[in-house]
Length: 285
Length: 258
Image (cartoon, rainbow over all chains, first blue to last red):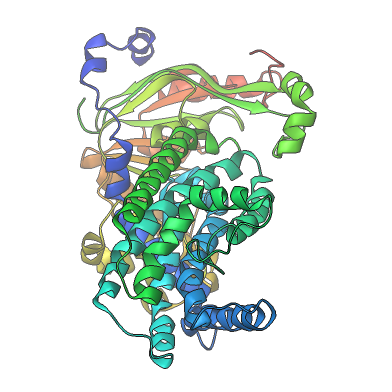
């Protein structure tokens, strides 16, 4: 009888030849098409029933640029030539990073129905958020180039570096998004913390100014501020894009190396935490 | 391990139940000690040993909250057991719920591809299956409508149509046969019998003796997370009836047993 057989433990020989779970990276790779489909789904759902649809992706940063340009060139009297382009070249990567991280906070939670029912690497959800924002980022290069043309900004071969810059930024963003996506599952107030932190980080990143052209240190806190900027990986990320777009030159090698290291570090840490904690997500959803 | 084999070895799944679930940092800090004390361990499954050979069909029976669905979820790999291990070989088609992962805003067509990708199929593979899936679901032109406009029967039909076409080695079904009209139910049953004759391992949760008996010769009875019986379905059913008559069928919480 079956019941008798089952009472004895399974033979030890079976344990040795039992198949190991595939490595997390390989498993994720086998679901790459799912990530692509999730990206498409997000874009489709986002622009459903909107008349302008994808155009919003291009209009949004332009409108923001207008607001900031007016604010900063009239009130703050920024001395940059073509300030709107200077601003846009860092605003676009900032919006990409900011939106991906914010949307990624809920990537796991909003897909809980699926996570409860289908076995799949949960990292696909935050990564698809990064992916859909990358598509938006790429589309927003169109208005960027239009602004460049309108302002007679020279199109230099350095612009060919942009895809590399975007790749590095995407790797960096993925790590941060993964990290906060898993943290939010355990503590829902991570969301509020991150929202405030992102505001702070925006002003501590060279979006509205530039590290090289910062004024002379006149106040006691200025060296501290400058250190913050130098420690902020986004400073280097934005240089990767601003240098070709605004200054028309390739970023310095040291900038590229620092940006790459930060990106790899972020992805390794973010993925590690996510992978370690994701089996426990289901208990907290 | 051979394809289609499942070994469940001393599996335990524990849910920590908090009187008030701590989900914010402040609560965790403020109630640091209180929430630890008031945490209750609920073993949804414990010390469960079952091994299922390739091509075998097994029904899981038990009262509500006995751990059937939890066991199916651990087999499907959705839940990681806290104790013991579940080993399985081959592709698992988890029909734990039909249409899990459907996006109501998208059309049926988009959802077929999305669901296929969720199960690990490439776009190309799904393209080859697409016509068969639509034919099985009998949805016709509705396939290009957003799923939110579907009736619940249409929804379930599309779900089953996808799940039946994934060439599984292990088929997991959680009482999903009670969908659609009678004719469609017969069709689903016939499809499952096809799988059975093709040597697919089959795990089935049911409260319906007739359905279980027609599909599975063997049954495992779960009772409060323990394996109460494992053997021929007729005897299993008697055991299940007997347990059901016993005292208090319902989840039991072992207070602070950690």
